[in-house]
Image (cartoon, rainbow, N blue to C red; front, side, top):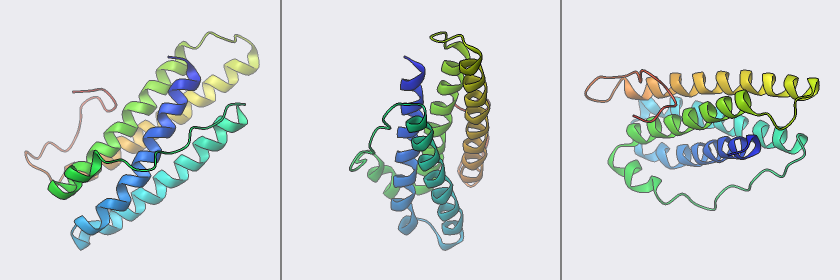
Length: 155
């Protein structure tokens, strides 16, 4: 997968997360709705800035899906688990972009190296932010294993 494909995958994960948090609100207890609104706002901002960065890079950002039907059953069954899953999906996408930016050899100019270095920093920061948000959701879930040892890597 190319660097732009990995970048588009990160955008898709952010689009799904922004959408997913909208369906969680009604399912969460009132004490967790503020956290969901904050996460939704963060993902909307990341989604928008990622789309803008892809466009600035000269590519067309992929449009969001009209709906994400796979999210609905889990939202009703366990909204906190869905929130954690949304964050895990984002962490995985940003980790993949980090790797793609680390191994991209399509352009070895100084400007390209500067771009991929900046992209790795962004990807690492967003992976970390998603892992921390997932931790906030998991701390209330049994079996009380709130952290994921290697965020962004499938278990």
